Structure formats: C-alpha cells, structure tokens
Image 1 (cartoon, rainbow, N blue to C red):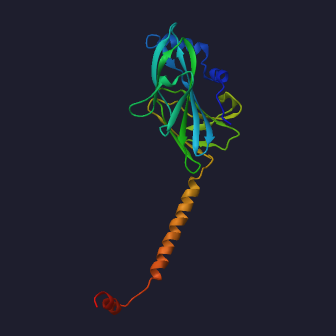
Image 2: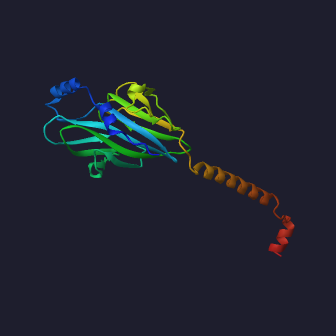
Image 3: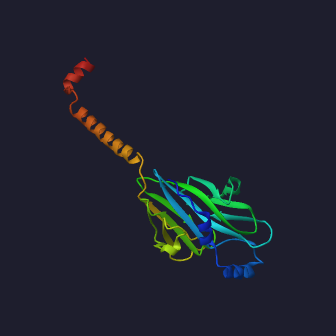
Length: 236
C-alpha cells in the first residue's frame, strides 16, 4: 500500500506563524519575493530492494503577482529516478550540471506545498540516502510509517514527538541542529524487503566452490604416465 502525503495537514505543518511571515517579509522584501520556507519534510516508504521517498517543502511568494523561482532540491545523490508529485510538473524539474535536481517555475502569490518523489536502490535490506543542503534549513523532519519495518538512523537525527509529525501514522525523526548550505545529512535505511540478490550471491558462491572442488578432484585423479613412458609415446 502506497502512503501519500496529506496536503492539508502537510500545509499546516509547513506553515510559519503569521507574525514570523510578516517579519521575514519586512526584512527581505528588498531581496526577493519568493523563498523556500525553512521547514522541510521527507517521507520514506519501503519497496523490494528499494527505498521510495517524497521530499516536501513550501514555497512562499509574498508579492501580488506570479514570480519566477529557481532552486536546487535536497534529494539523495543515490536516487536513480525522481518525479513530480504535488505543486510541480515534470517540466519544472531538471538535472543539475553537477548532479541533483533543480526546480524552476513561476509561483503564484501565497504559500504552495511542493512534493517531489524519488527512488533509491537498496541491497541486502539496506539503503543509503546522502543529502546535501542547498538552502538554509531550520528544521528537517524524516517521517517513517509506524507499521513498516523500516529502521532509519543518522548521527544528525533524533526521535521526535507527536508534534513533529503531521499525521499519527508516521514516526518522526528531526535534525538536532539547523542545516546550512553545503551541510550533509546521511541516512541509513534498514529493514527493507529483499529480492533475489542475496539468493543469487549465495548460489553463485556455492556454485563457484563446487566448481573449484571438482577441478581439484579432477587434477588429483588425472591419469599419470611416467617420464620414460611419455617420451616413448611422443618421441618414439
């Protein structure tokens, strides 16, 4: 069963108190009318030898007209696929020259939730998510379904409480400190369902061992001819 973000609850969770919004607008009006809010979410789901995820954040346009905005996304560098989910179209996403994904579009006035899905391959029940912040992130929350077997660990994440999750079906993990541009966040994901990789590896190892034993026995039991006998046959 695929778990999808719930827009209204996520919007409320990502929303900044209105007093804070006015302070930000007053202090940064001369700099830009569009910004990414400092709270970010990531939801993980398990798949066969795969980690599926959704990266969710909000974009605020404080002007009274659509504004163009371009920004890098903090997706795992191990991701082998990504797709738009909410608030963006496929044409709004592109690969960055040095790797990663860039969002670029015209945002309408107000606050809009953006969600981008990604897929990371796993091996032996483990997957690694390596993230690099491209913008200042005050709070990053990782959400793991409580009913799943996923175990997510990171030196920079601590277990949160119910107030850190927009939905009770998720267990929240939050960053212990804000992330600045260039900061890295590595998340190890364990407990994923395994495919046939381990079976093929074990079977290949057993086959190689049997082949080696067969070769050794064939060498030990090979027909032997003394030197003089061999000379008589080959030379005459």
